[in-house]
Amino acid sequence: MHIAVILKQVPDLVEEVEVDSQGTDIDRDSVKWKLNEFDDHALEQAVLLKESSGAEVTAVALAADGVDQLLYAAVARGVDRAIRVTTASARTDAPAAAAALAGVLADMGVDLVLTGVQAVDDLHGQLAPILATRLGWPHVSVVSRVSLEGTEAEVTQEYSGGRMATLEVDLPAVLGVQAAPRPPRYVPISRLRQVMASAELGSAAAAAAAPALGSTVTRLAAPPQGQGAQMLEGRPEAVAEQIVALLRERGLVEA
Amino acid sequence: MAGVLVYVESDGERVAPISFELLAAARELAQSLGGDVEALVAAADTGPLVGELGAADTILEVTSPALAGYLPEAQQLVLVEAIRARKPAVVLVGYTSAGLDLAAGAATATGLPVVAYCTGLRAEGSDVVADSQLYGGKLVATTTTSTPAVFSVVAGSFAEANGHAGGRGERIVTAPPAGLAQLRSRVLGTTGAGGGAVDITKAERVVSVGRGIGGADNIELAEELATAMGAELGASRPVVDSGWLPKERQVGKSGMTVKPKLYLAVGISGAPEHLEGMHDAGLVIAINTDGDAPIFKVADYGTTCDLFDLLPAITALLKPAG
Ligand SMILES: Cc1cc2nc3c(=O)[nH]c(=O)nc-3n(C[C@H](O)[C@H](O)[C@H](O)COP(=O)(O)OP(=O)(O)OC[C@H]3O[C@@H](n4cnc5c(N)ncnc54)[C@H](O)[C@@H]3O)c2cc1C
Image (tube, rainbow over all chains, first blue to last red):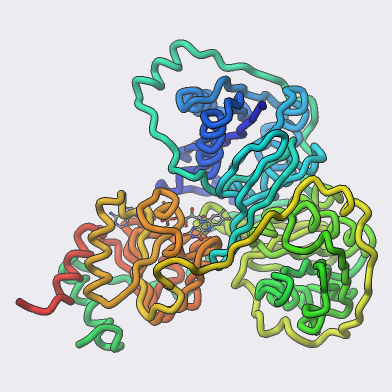
């Protein structure tokens, strides 16, 4: 059983995300990047499957600044090997990534592909369904638990209102992971250093070109300043008093 | 190539609210782009559903035992075949679990462009201009897309009330795709909501905790405030995925939808998937140290005070003296 887990970096939203001078993309140089949190869960799920079923796991990411670090971290977390995929295009959108990865994954002979259900910059669709459709494989997104039974995967899919279903999918397949059954594990820096000194990253070149998107971004901007919240100012004690006064005025707590 | 095709979601018995929003959006687009509003409904028995689809001009019905229960593979086959047969200018899918499965998948299979996370759509000539929420709601991307194209639409973006009537409601029964006989996936079972110890959907006051709370040990702070306020504790998804609070307290797209009179959001950024579960709350107060956090766009009142200072201060004021 060979599992590939696809990882990508996204802007850390805790920091400010600035728009570039053209006003159509983020300022990619000023952004602080981090592993997409849903990919982080996909990685955890892959390592859990390795531990429970002995599957072999390869982490795969499109080559970019900072990606090597991310792949070393995946090795430190427990994947067997990590591969960066070089492309002719600088595009990182899901249709471009799927085009680049489909051939590489097929050549690797993987049985199961795990990736995050979405990323905060997936304007042109999410990777799992695009990649699966290109490969002609079944796919399921919003997955929160995966187990393997022979040549099938059993997965939990979540819906709104707290509903869930258990689906069985023949392999090979692609799953868009929402959450692993347990929080992503923490790797000590010492272990990461050790991996960076000893592990070697593999690489592969994408054969397919990125497809046209048929869609152009004309503007990227902060949401319009609507009504917005009325901000309560002052020291915490003063703000607390204002909040309690608001609640009492409206009869939301006892006077 | 004309008209707007809406992918209808249901649990087999009722049409999902998002589908009415899509039908309302479809009518606006069809008025500019021309053509009909078409509703695609695929189920084991479409009988209970068609009566709710009066906003569509044509209702494309696909029935098969293989369509019992929601199976992404089966639904994608049906949607792809409908796009090929009807050649709509625009395909609308909700940004739901089904939308995450199907919008980009069907677009890829048919070679159409796809634009995700849409909150606004308008026609410009034969193009569609869309607004999409990106970066957790911190930025909005405006795109121009040539038709035909697929759009996935965030719940709460269009008026559901406008999606119930006004179409011709003609029924067209279509044969199920041959591929349904060779599916490579199956539904083993489903579980409904509930069964947990609490039901936050009925609470009048909710104190909802986000990742800003920092760890399981700090939940206590919010718990004390909730007790003093007579509120239920709610949570964002990462708090639940980290195991700090149980799943039954999760508010949002893949959790519960709450409509309390008071929603106090504590250390929650206000991602679209969270807002989906609480946008009908009465008074919304947000506590978040990041003044740019999207939660402040939907809150009535907000403060950038540190929650670790503010929560104990509010609790102290609400506790009976002595
Ligand atoms: C298909 C799908 C379904 C999803 N379903 C849901 C769902 O049902 N519910 C849900 O919530 N999410 C859901 N999500 C996840 C969603 O996209 C966001 O990742 C999530 O809502 C973020 O949670 P958060 O606001 O707690 O965390 P963050 O976005 O990390 O925000 C934490 C906030 O805390 C603030 N903060 C930090 N420290 C302090 C402090 N000391 N005092 C005050 N403020 C502080 C920070 O400024 C920050 O804004 C879903 C995602 C997908 C893809």
